[in-house]
Length: 383
Image (cartoon, rainbow, N blue to C red; front, side, top):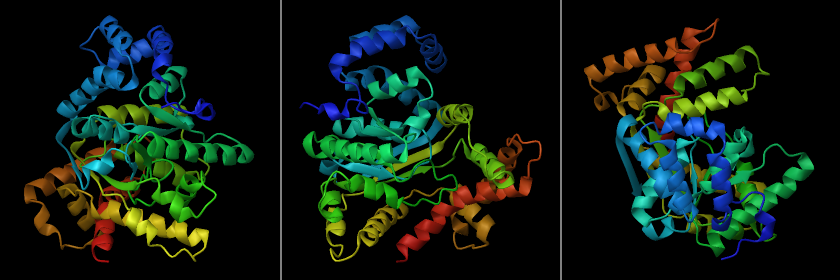
């Protein structure tokens, strides 16, 4: 199916565009260096041959991205799993998930879906992360579409409507599953909440009732659970930097470091759960409510499903107890695991490289990262 020209600036590359993009990437010294670092065991010439042999985006993913990610799973996870409630909805849904890792959230979901439905998701990615020309090319080869965050207020309205229309086109017209995070940027304290602005954006393609528009998107709340967050100490560092200087903003170099650490750091267990589409729950919202009330109601529905379907690990339960004093989950970890986790958090705090590091503050922030999913799980399951 043809994709309308209005989406040319943001959509993934089409198959007939790939040969030229492949040649541009292959000739790029930065891309060569990154591939050499990431895929050490395969000569770059062989990678280039595999790229040139890929006739479409999915073929490229299966030839290059899939084996690379399988290597990460083998080396850097102890468990890797997917659960879902309706396989048919996986094939044409909008997966809205909590957001832990800049790259790995959508990457892991894609390789899990390849094994179940033979397809990958199209991925929403902010243009603030496209800090090198080769990165922008690579993500669009890898079935990503661009969320424009650096536009003026006037431009933002038009770009948001175009983005909304593109997502609707992908799902309703092409039956292509799509992934988008529930908020702009990662929830660094793991207190996952859907931004109401995201819900409003998703409905902008239609001038009708927001409820009817959202039902057409087949929203499937998706819960991402990592046992260990490789970037936990970097997030703690940023929390202190913002505490000490409210004007602090991450640099492009900070984003690159977070991408690298998130990709190549140890994650332990990794689990994804894709809920059934919430169309019936959205459709039941009172049409007489105002737009803001409807938006808030949809966000609450999404959050409830995400929170209920976390996979929680000993680190979550133990750090929840450390933070709150609540011992109800004391049977979820052993004395040996407690000792290991005490050593873990001490090590993570020591990795925060600030000259004025506040150890107790950083420790508390790391505890919160692992405890907040337990808090949200309790609240969602006791409703």
